[in-house]
Image 1 (cartoon, rainbow, N blue to C red):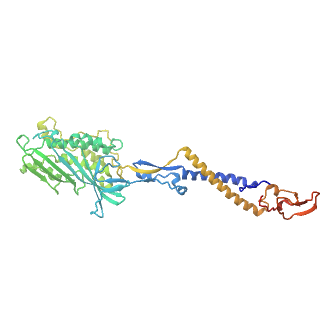
Image 2: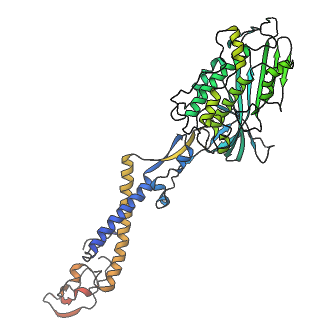
Image 3: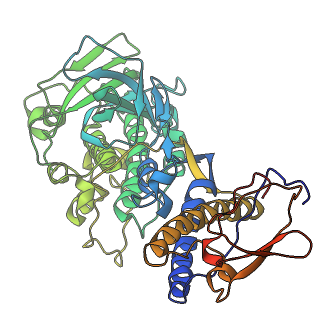
Amino acid sequence: MPAASFFTYPITRRYPAKFTWIILAGGAVLITFFTFVAVAGNAYQLETYYTNDYNATIANKTWYQRQAFSWATDLETTCQPALLTIGGDHTTTNQGFHYAIGSFHHESNVSSIPLTASYRNGSLNACEVKEIVIELVRKDQNRLPRNFWSWGSSYARSTTECTMDTDDGPLKVNFTSELPTALRRSEITDGFLALNDTDHPGRYIGAQILVSWYIQISQAMGYSAPGELEDDSAASWGSGTVTLTKSDVGDYKSLEFFYCDTGFNDDRGGLSWLHPPNTMQHWYDQWTPEAALNHYNASMPNISLVVDAFAKTYYSLLLSDFNTTEETKLTNALSTGGGIEYLQSRNNTDLAEVRSIFSDKGSGTIDRVTKDSTNLTQPLDFAPHTTLFSRYLCSIPKQKSTFKLLFAVVLADIVFLNACWTVFGWIATWWLGRTDSNAEHCIGCANASHDIPLTLAAGSASGGSYSQLSSDTGDEHGGHQGRLSAPHIARVHSGV
């Protein structure tokens, strides 16, 4: 007999017929299951990706990240927070004004002033317009300009405070916004990222009204002088600052809606001011006929109605850009059709009268933004939950190439199925052996119906021993011939 190898191979035997459907059905189920597992565990890899929608990106889980298959992979969508810094430029998701962050501070610890904040798309809550400032700046030194050009360098800015959720807990954040100068007023509407009269009619109309009243401030300053307009030797306003803060009055149609803190100087060295708790009503009253009858000399420019109309429009746009709640709707003139009509129908009769002295154009109103066909009965409020428009760096699972996917899946299926087939063989052999003592013998041995003749040559070179062997008479060659029942063969030899 030739020398035997160290490696062995099994003698196979067919399973009973009833096992056929068990194997086919079980194999189909296992192939499907293992394919899903292989795809979940090997078919995807993390790739970096920038997104503007943090919440939707994190919440979007594909099938292989859900509970049934999540154990097969550790691929999770993760996003780094946006780093907010003081001075950084931002817009809200309503895409209106541009804002710079002025400061951070904790609600519970005002002495702790962080310089940065980690932001994960948290809502801007409890937003409040803290102040609106109008800086009246001369563009030239024309003493009595009687036009809008000379005050065209005037500009306005605002400060709005919101509570924002960050990784460091809730923070109070001040957002400052500065409008371009009055002569560059068209840039206000150009700066709005989303401005149309169909999707956001309130914002669209409000921006147009704001631009119109903005240039009217320069116009009104040109026709206002500290003294008689006909007297060319009278003083001329040099510059001024108007700071408006919200009062306790909730009706935006009232002239007491804002406290005013103003200061003006003229080219003769004169100073005029008005401080809180004075309101716009007190400023306006300086130029009423009653004040003139009492020989009251007005110390402020006659621009109070124009400033009031502009400030209320600006205030409403800021509220609409940050968030709209039931409380802010009461003070937001742009949230109703009646409020919009109020803003665009204000009439500064004093300005109209003064302009009529020097020009044929004596109107104290602005051009109407809405037409007769404009539907002001539709909802004009904005999203109740507003966030900052930020970009986030995320790691998102992406599918591998087709070749890598197929190779990984096929290889995994082969490994898993081979392991299952081996386990199935162990279980089936044990189960069949309980009812059939010949289950582990080859089919030829198990089905032998006659004895197998064996010839034992005397003095055989390959030694061995046999059990349950009955000897007959020796043959003519000096050997012994015996018969051994096939199911009971048990040979002990190291070479077989």
